[in-house]
Amino acid sequence: MNLEYFIASRLISHNKIKGKKVEPAIRIAIIGIAVGLAVMLIAWAIVMGFKREVRNKIIGVNSHIQVTSYFSNFTYEMDPVRISDTLINNLKAVPGVAHVQRLYTKPGMIKTATDFQTVVLKGADADFDGTFLKNCLIEGKMPDYTSPSNDVLISEHLTKLLDLRLGDGFLAYFIKGQSVSARKFRICGIYNTYFSEFDKYFLLADARHIRKLNGWDEHQAAGLEIFATSMEAFPKAEEGVYSVVSRAADKSKESFYLRNLFEMSPDLFGWLQLLDTNVWLILFLMIFVSGFNIISGLLILILERTNMIGVMKALGARNFSVRKVFIYMSVFLIGKGMLWGNIIGLSFCLLQKYLHIVPLNPTTYYVDSVPIELNWLYILIVNAGTLLISLLVVLLPTHMITRISPVKAIRFD
Image (cartoon, rainbow, N blue to C red):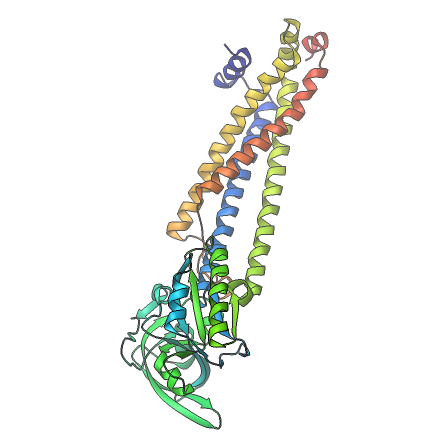
């Protein structure tokens, strides 16, 4: 039988941890561990959720990789490149590439009876993947561009700005050289991505309009948008895409330019990296607070049990054996605090994930409620790290047991 474990379990199970100073100190230590762990779990889940949501929106409105003309000036009036079916098929065959589609953009202006607004037409053809925008629909339906169409998808922001409704028609004007061309469109769907940089300007329209306005043939486009199967597969996919595009450029004499999602949105990804720093700061502070509570609670517990320590030493128990009793007691208390910490933290995360109890301003945070991502591996890491650090912290106050004299301890009151 493990004597130290037996003594510690008897003290815990029979509620022997009592005293004017012990009970409040132990309770505070347990609450400190519970609150610290809950805050760490919630902070990690929120930051991971923010990163996922913002990253998905960046990819949804752009792509993982964008291929354009080297001579384009990064406005939406791009120089065309010739995109062959062979190039697209070769890119689709790259490991880690999920989808490839042609890129079309054309700046213009919408004019209504009362107002006007500059916009950018984003062209879509039969190969366009509209999954992201379909998930952002708030009214109407996705346009069908398998045949020529004047239907467009417009943002809720633009409909409010221009006082437009679902089914309304409007005129859009486009400049080419010294001439102005007009097109009449009809609203078939309204979306809201909560991504203001996209919602303020973009309309989804039939790519045939953009090709005709620019005088391009069916093999010309502003570039390519390439989507990876996942962020984990993205680095390898980028290498493969670069290799395929380089070979195509040598053969066709086209000047291609590649950009990835980090280069297209450096400010947003810089903000996400700053969130990582904030999480590590929160983790450090919570571990420090929890460790301080454990140390203070254990020190008071040792002082209240000084007589018991003296008796054990007088009966022949070695310092390490006595320390083990208090280490086991600390493990019980740490376990209780972690249990409540997990219950509180995960309960909040689940409530927020499914009920959205904490709203946000989407114009500032790109989402309408606090996003949550529950990754069980991260939860396990946080719990394991908390337990390990707590046990290491426990060793410090138990070291004072080695300095306690049996004679003085038995007389201690």
